[in-house]
Length: 221
Length: 221
Image (tube, rainbow over all chains, first blue to last red; front, side):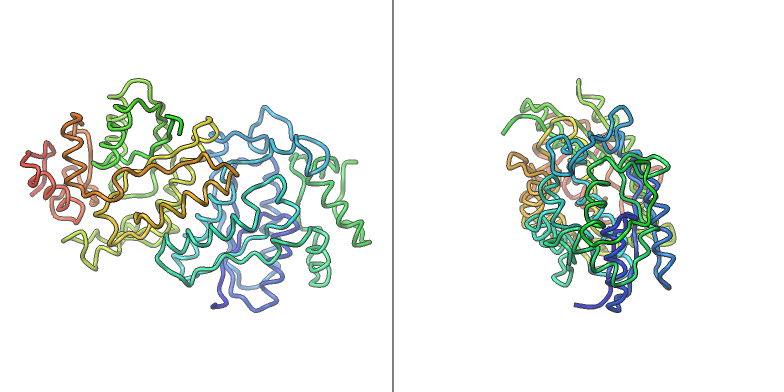
């Protein structure tokens, strides 16, 4: 496998750690971020900071936010609140966006492939499996097969080193790599400060607690 | 399988025939068209006419044309001419857009799925197999598996009744159904009249000839 890869960076903890990891392993990277109508579009500003910390990485930002209006999800629907509580609770299913990962990864891969980059890396992790079917290993495996057939190219790989580990384990890796977590954004709600109450904040805070480290972000509560 | 389906309509001969066929079979349809930076964006006007001929079909037009600038293809690159000649010639490979069908079908499916439509129909046909890997039956089969896993839903189907038949056979079906082919657009070049020389025009003209029918479109040559 050649050491070139497109990476989707949301500006969250997982993809920010992944870009630092692949960069430290010597990958030549092309970062792609998406505005898809998410209320927490502030994460894109974080994605820009994270990428600009690493020399020589091209960063393409793709605006598919008009699509958000067509898709049925609490993440993109301005009339619906983000559910509070535990990440794996039933009400968190309202944060599912149909085909979100497939849409973003297929577009990002096409951009990279147009620049002769065959591989694509995604920061998906085990904590997302319960709610989000498009974060499960069986999805990733089939998605890779489909991308290869789409381009008649067996050298395409979908790189997901975190797919079977938890956010806490990702954070451990990132703390060793020196990821500047003050430049990342996790909260789904879209306020000026992270809410500290949505499923996404809860999961992040638990991980910092388990790593016995202070989260450098400020929280509303 | 329930008789509801999202359909991608380009405004070309194949998808226009498909929408007439599914409509005649009693499907409840939601049509989706894409502006992706194609030079022949005139086809979208044709798509609108075709859909408006059929009562009760919602039509969503999605503009992903900014994406065209990021993708490497003669179809979307304004500095490169559309190759002339036979559709299956080597130079036609420059009209490949990386992941084109996968991007459009994944977005269209997400829009339909947000409206409780599980299936998606695509007008791809056997004549496209040689040049376009994302029109081959093996791609469609894997794509369907991936869509099902993406949504954890085995009831999703990708409907491609033309995948193993030629454009001539599609045209025969359409002529019986009374498809108004004067409202369709096939030429890749993007002029006021169809050029009659690009691979796409050549294939269309051959099909009309084989069906012993006059193409109702006007051609520059």
